[in-house]
Amino acid sequence: DELNVEHQHFGESLRERLAIHAINTLSEQNVIKVVPEHVEIRTLYNPDQPGIPQGYIHLWVDMFNLKHGTPPPPICIKKIQPKEYELRVCIYGTVDMHLDETSITGEKMSDVYIKGWISEQDETQKTDVHYRCLDGQASFNWRFKFPFEYISSTSSIVIKKKEHFWNLNSAERQVEPTFIIQAWDNDVISRDDYLGSLEMHLNNLPPPAKSAKVCNIKQLNKKRVSLFKNKRLRGFWPIFDKDDNNNKICRGKIEMEMEIVDKNEIIQKPCGNARDEPNQYPKLEPPKIMKIQGNIVLPGKELDLKETLVKIGPGIEFKDQKYISTLCGRYYNNEGIHWIDSNKKKYTPTVGEFVIGIIVSVKSESYIVDINANKIALLSKLDFEGATKKTRPMLKRGDLVYAVIILAADHVDPEISCIHESGRHYGLDQLSNTGYLMRTSLFFCREILHKRSKILEDIGSICQFEASIGMNGRIWIQSNSEEESYCIMQFLKSLNRSINETKNSGFLANLSKIDIRNLHRQLEKVCVK
Image (cartoon, rainbow, N blue to C red):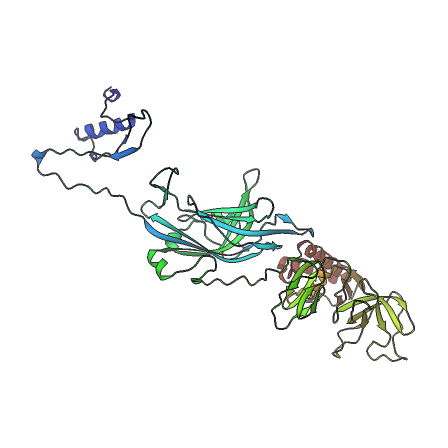
């Protein structure tokens, strides 16, 4: 009943009056020893604005009986001062990023960029844009820097911000130290598309994976670690989105390094944002991948090729000391070899490239050969190794030849030969009619001849076979049996479909071991028979 009595000096709420009553009675009755200090909250009012709170005051009042002697010294209730820290995040790149857009050529792609911020802070930083990301791998080498004030006793960040623009002073709040990172697809006309995100409590964040292969959603359920204790963490973290059933779906993997430095280390180890100077701790180099790589170019565009030795393929010509594109398509560069893939079915003859031709007509001194180009090619009957008028091969319509382009000009028909200018054989000759001819994309033929591609070696480790690969989109195969040849052709056709969907340069060089084992099992079944 005493608690229900309204009094102007009692607490404003029942909870506060109950606390005061407990302090006054329990200590006097020696029921329990209670600290006499009690922080109370009082609302401030102004008679000119009745009923509208003008603020709050937190206080307690101590009263001492002077008969008991001099009062003790006052208790210091000064608030704990936060310490200055800086969060440094180096974004190296992404792997298996979700491809959200479709290019004008029908390929899946995304223009990826990463942005991040500390929760409740207004500052948001983002990387540059990795345009035309076709395989989910984007490179940035970009640094974020976020200064903040931290109280270790409460494990919280101090945020100073004006609640309203008319306030003179900033209000302080303590929030959880949370870092948020997001991946976006850049759009020029419409709004950017959201790809995925990850929120990490700096005192309780998931540990990084050592490689992209072991990075997945299950990583978020592992034992958490503290960045304040570890100081620095580097590895792969998954970013995710949620489906209609609120289930997490992995939308990509980000490779980054997170580091927390205190005030002294900020002075001793200075560094700049992005790749600005001082570019150190660590030094971030521009991505090695050329930004023009994979970009769509139009005829007449000048290409900046800075290598000392440049080998150009279809779609590029050297004119007036400049490299000019002659086709509308996608530019590629593999170890100094530059070409433009125009996604055309017809082959553009280029001097020095090997092709597989089909004899379509026989003349007195030459053969008319189809090389899958807009023009027919000419093959002299004497352009065979050791050929004379008496020993020259007598080919008929429908026969296959493996030859090299020796002449390719705008206004004349291309010429081919079965004799290489270097004198080496290279297998240039008539191809046996017992073999099989398959047609593929021009891009696939270039990929299967990539220096790092081991596809032909893997097939040869299971069975013996012969193969001639033409840059004009034709592959000739012959093995010990028709079953083996058919099995090899079906495997190459499946790879051709896969690489046409991704248009990923180096695709065959990075085939997983599972794909190779599947090929081995198929060939072993045939070879056992």
